[in-house]
Image (cartoon, rainbow over all chains, first blue to last red; front, side, top):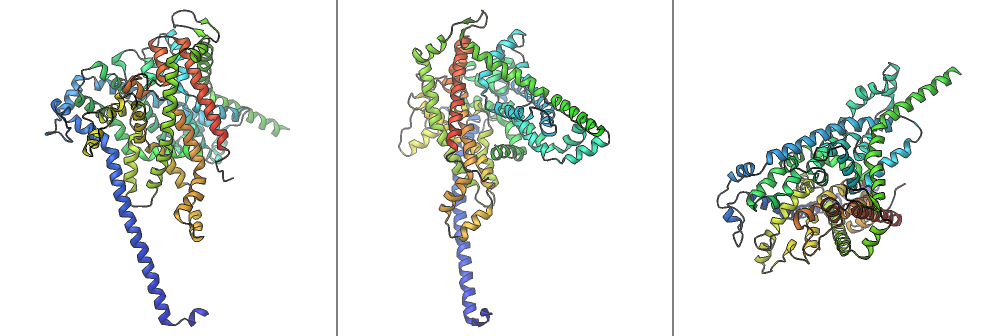
Amino acid sequence: MKINTIPAKRLLEIERLHLERLSLQKKRKYVRNVFVYFFMIVLSAIFMLPIFWMLSTSLKLSAEIFAFPMEWLPDKAQWENYTTAFSKYPLWQFMGNSAYLVVVSTIGQLISVPLIAYGFARFEFPGKNILFLVMLSTLMIPSHIKYIPLYWAFDKIGLIGTYWPIILPEFFGHPFFIFLMTQYMRSIPKELDEAARLDGANSWQILLRIILPLCKPVLAVIVVFSFLWNWNEFMAPLIFLDDFGEYPISVGLAFFQSRYSVEWNLFMAATLVSIVPILVLYFFAQRHLIGGLSAIGVKG
Amino acid sequence: MIKKYMLSKREKSAAIDGYIALSPWVVGFLFFYGFPMIMTFYLSFTQWTLVDEAQWIGLENYVRMFTRDPVFVSAAKATGLFVLYSLPIKLILGLLLALLLNLKIPGMDYFRTIFFLPAVISGVAVSLMWIWFLQPDTGVVNTILRYVNIEGPGWFWDVDWALPSIAIMSIWKVGGAAIIYLAGLQNIPAHLYEAAEIDGANKWQQFWKITLPLLTPTLLFQLIIEMIDSFRIFTEAFVITEGGPLNSTYFFLFYFYEEAFNNFNMGYASALATFLLVIIFTSTALVKWWSTKWVYYEN
């Protein structure tokens, strides 16, 4: 019991020193936080500059946009630029086309991915592991290698200029989604299947009634990514569609500069409008986006 | 005896159900990966304009590519330089940003939202935004440079700056890489840092001895993904520069697109596509082989 031999005065001294050190640490942490906040705020302001500039330009008069030196803000916000953009460019049509592609593609993924993942996660059969490896390796295959043969094939059956070449592949499962779904299904206890099987359920009833309801988190990830990718997809619709009115918003926007007289205030308004659905998705479903990316980044 | 028979029957039916479940993927694989890859490879030895019969010309496309096609040289140079410029940006700045975003400070989620945002916007929208942002006379960047008496370059409209400008745009999208790093960082067990702290290691040592080694699998993943992505740069060339000025941003995939779907030289375009595929596969294999020297696996 050595501690008893330390005089009370010395104990107080130690206590005081300890507190001093703690408060020093706290102070240091506080200073560090202030510094970090300051740095982060400046950095995010810089990162938001292109978006701010797009917004500011979209609210300017045509005369203001080429003012030299440039002005950071319009004299008066011209909100009617947005109505002009909507009436001048077929924005509703483009976004409608994009929405159609997003919805149909997502449905395709939601039908095919659980079925395929179920096969990988729950059944034993010869060749399964090799097939799974092949499936994963298709993630590495750049899509450009497919365009010429698919263009030829779809041209043969008269489907160039329709949405079929873009939509059809979505009904055969994206390897990224299949991978996520398979991993998730493997984590669901097999006893659930066995119990249902004893009650007389067949494989497909088990998938629909038992497995699928438990896979909601992955289904959400699929919806979010499918939305994002299909809204932003550029090269496939550019190649397979040939009519301006059929274009999704990504391809439509890309032709603005060559198609319309250059009015950057209206262009910027249209660009901003085109990303609004993505912004909404982003703010409401960020969790799923980051979750999906993290899953593949850490396991991959 | 009976039991054994029943079990094998059950196994058999399980295998059949398994094959049925996989069948959509198998069909999709054959039609959307297998068939196109084989056909592209075959077409690369032909001359074909889509309307006539494909004519077998042997290695002629490849000979033309390697010996007498100046555009191929520009495309290879532009793409190679872009990979060289943008990869370190994405990998290093992405990691630095992730380290910042990993600091335990209240409100960090908001900053995460801001920095990740550019990574979800479409390439076309980003391109349009940046054309306007980098205008030499009235753009934001050159105006700010003028505040400090620097006359900024002509960015996309300058033959020396067009390619670096497109690489600079990828700085803006670095949040995408940062989010994946962040997941890797948060996967590192906290007790390792606690132990290191007790042993008297400072933050700098902790980074080099714990964070970086444990992050190498994520680093490898990012390196491969971003490398493939950089080789496939297309949208920026299509929307912003149309390959110019003076072919300085005539990226490989842009050349492929022009040859295939503007000039309908399907045979030559297939040779270009095959070449790019081989380059991507070889560099991925090289990176994987090299990675055995520096990637740290816990088990």
